[in-house]
Every structure is written in C-alpha cells, then in structure tokens.
Amino acid sequence: MNEETFWSGPLGRWVVDVAASGVGSLLPEHEWRRAERVNANVLYSDLCDGFVLNLLYFFIDPASANLILVKEVSTSNFQVDHPTRFRLFTLLLHNLHRFYRLRLNRIVVMTLPDVFSIVRNPTAEGSGHELNKVLLLLLGCAVQSDQKEIFINRIKSMNLELQTALVAEIKKVGSSHFYHPYSPPKNSLIISDATSMLHKSNRSPHKSDI
Image (cartoon, rainbow, N blue to C red; front, side, top):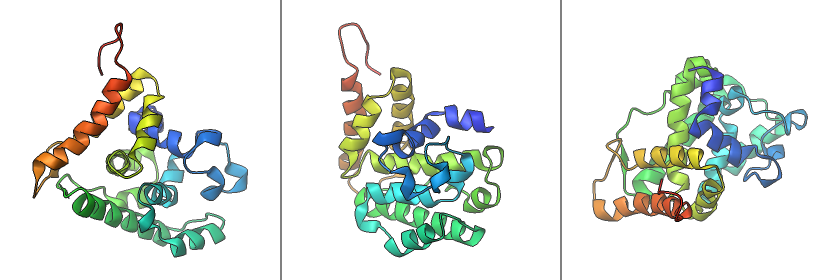
C-alpha cells in the first residue's frame, strides 16, 4: 500500500475529515500539530505519532482522557520520539479493547494492529495495513459511542460513494472479527442502528439505499 492508496481509502478520508478538515474539524489542529503545520496536508507520519489518534479516542470516550500524557506531548511542541509513540499506541489499543469489551460487550478476535510495525515503519508501504486496522477500530467505537450522532451526521454529509465505503467498513465491526460472548442480539442492533441511520439519509424516490 502506498500513501496515495492509504489516503484515498475510506478510513484515510474519514480520519482527515474528523481531524484536519479546517474550521469544522472535531479535533482543532492546533491541539495536535505544530503551528507551522496547521492547515497543511496531513502526513501519514502524523498518524504514526499516535497522538492525534489518542485525541480522537478521547473525543469518542471523554472519560478515558489521559490529561497527563496530553500535556506531556503538548509541552514538547508535539515532538514524539519512538518510546512515546509506543506508549501512545499501547494506550490507544488498551482503551479500544476496553471499549469493545466493557461498553459494547464484544471481544476483538481479529489480528490486532502491529504497534511495532507502525512505530518502526511510519510509512504507508511499511505499515499502512496495520494503521488501517487502528482506524477501523476507532470508526467502530465512534459510531457506537455516546458521540455517535456527531460522527454519523458527518458521514451523512459526505458523498454517496464515500458513505457506501464507510458503511462497508462499519459492517466489518459486526462481522466475525468481533465475538459477542453475551447478549448477541442486543449488540448486533448497535451496528444495525448505525448503518440504518446512514441508509435512511440517502433514501429518495430516485436513489436506492446504500
């Protein structure tokens, strides 16, 4: 996977929308980028720092926010070394696992993202598939969290092609990659609700459902 392929994919386009789409971004750029980089194109290596992805998770689940770590990275002018990157991704995967297990009553059985690959190879060619796994887990949390209406409404505002692609990604979260140890009917409805909201947004006499 090259960088162009990564950014043209639905998950890459989604993370740019929520983190670097200008004034309407959910994450103000000055909170995760150096001043001279605000409004510049997002680089793949920006995501590999792990900081902005943690901020995105904290937006999804505010109770999990690690303010000490946020302050530590912010006061270093967002300069993140390898050990800190590893800490950030370890924290992120821990929080994602807890969210699926405790909030959604799901066990992630897919092969987890290779954190070492992302940290050591911050290029799309070296770790693009692994970083996409992280983004898939984040997207799944986003559309099933208390903030889901915010995320779903943003997806509704995207073009139909991208909406369709993101619905396909969301459905993966309800697939065999995730196991329901208890109450599967209830948890299945969470994914169904999120995808049906997107389907309805595109229903018209001249347009078929996604």
